[in-house]
Picture 1 (cartoon, rainbow, N blue to C red):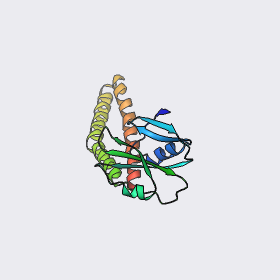
Picture 2: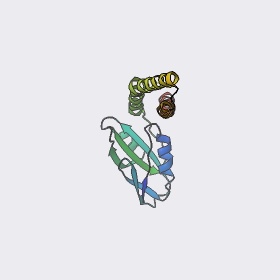
Picture 3: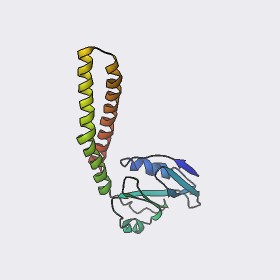
Picture 4: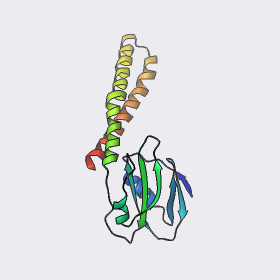
Length: 166
């Protein structure tokens, strides 16, 4: 079974819930946008997803009873490791989000330094042009730019919440 799905760096809990909902299947491969599952008779599985900037030591996961399902080198850098184990194993699930938080912080910094500055400049420039000339064509640029700015703000807040809570 192959499914196309996308999860952001900050959506690790959603990704794990998605994987664990595939009862009767185990993750075989992940290529960045498609998850490939094979049938399994191991019963319900617990998954763990680890992200690291450099190749990582995975001993904590094997010590907790996990077996690596697959590994993926991200298109923007970073290694994703997917692990599974039967839910009957009750050892704590290792959670090291340090590299994930660092990568998210880099994205937030990019938004703050570049995207935010460009959006604010475009908004003020076209608002000025609109007020000066009262030409509705300026609104065709201004309104979508305001929508994009709102979206960027919402994503930035989501990233900040992840960094704060993990």
